[in-house]
Image 1 (cartoon, each protein chain N blue to C red):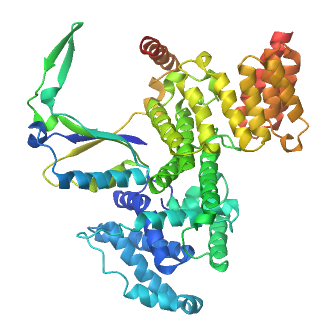
Image 2 (cartoon, one colour):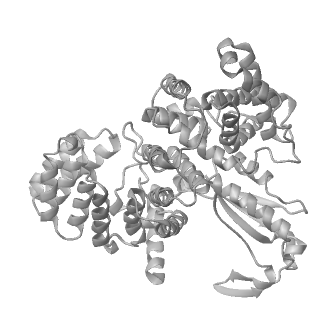
Image 3 (cartoon, rainbow over the protein chains, first blue to last red):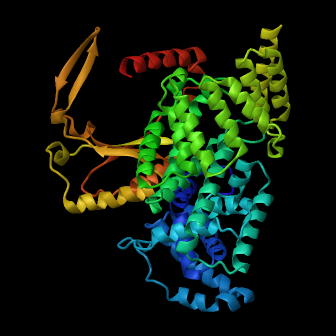
Length: 429
Length: 140
């Protein structure tokens, strides 16, 4: 998780540092955040320690307890930082003194992190990184940096933006947190569900960015999805009673189970109904279905659990024709009861069409066409095309697929849509 | 990447000596840590080889050999399936396994379709898929 491209050209020590960082950086930042009461400062301290490790370990060897070493170094560097900088000194002077005589040096004989606190600390870190005072872009960047332990260039690569853009988002996030006096405290009971929703939203956004890259040549950036899954699993490990947290992880697991089937040997997109289901990852399906069951038992179904329920209908169908479309329509009905949403309406229309009523589905889609929020959404003409094709109106269908192809920002998806348009034209001529 | 971690058998595990309460609670804590880190996908201990069988395939005939099996160090006593960022991360996790009585583990990355490279042609992939579809039909 370092600044340089990893790992092929790096040596074994660097890779070990990277591994330790990936495993422990969230705990480091969380522990330091509790001690200094500022996520931004804590993250800077942890980064300082990482830099020192990269300088010293290759020559001096890896310490017996690398994590304890990182924590102590981060703390000492933090004290130096605060003493050197006047603004910091004024703000954190007392904290530096506290830090100086902080908990006894961790050693191999005792746990590096406070075992009674570390879970809550990491959870608080996640809540703070997704704080409503931050923009969504900043929430995503800070979550990946401070909780995921990713480097700025890694995040930048994943989102296809420049390093400077991500660095700026992180800096801005830290500054906003500091200036708005957010501190480091878990959300109160009254705001818990709203704050949890923000965390779930950020994780799912990261997952989706990897699942269906909105721009660029690559259809999937699965590393990002893997990272979101990891964050989601961390979250359910820390908040095991939250049905929606389990619902989200179940949803991601089931969707991720399809990654191996989502592109063919040539890198072309394969859509759900055409996927070779033998290539679906059965371990992930099993985990997702088990987790869905657990989530259902924990409490009332929220939006993620309902989406997981729908995804599970596909996962359970050994062949496309085995799909229980009526169950899927019911899932979308339940989702729409939670709140109207044109994209959910569109998905429901797809399911209605598959359940055997393309005419009714087409009527819904036509209604959606007048919804301004849907203008520019390429899946609207794409779905319309599918439904028209089902109704035998191939010529119109071709036009819709062409329209969808013009609208999508994803090169691979465009190819699929163009191919469909061509197919429709051939049938109708 | 996904990897499978094999816990190798020991004389104790082969003799059916059950772990102590201390061992169990330490391992429980480690597994909780793995789960909380989003790493552990699966894992369990295995009965000693005396309860296992081997099936050997020769000249079209399958021969069943009952356990126990002799070469203790080659046997497997348990497994994990981990999702990690790299082999180094798996090694770093393995360092943290609360073993200290001469146990050993073996970490093996799981094949992913792209590992097969060009040898795994679309035709072969198709054949594999057809085969698996048939298996599913037979077993539901």
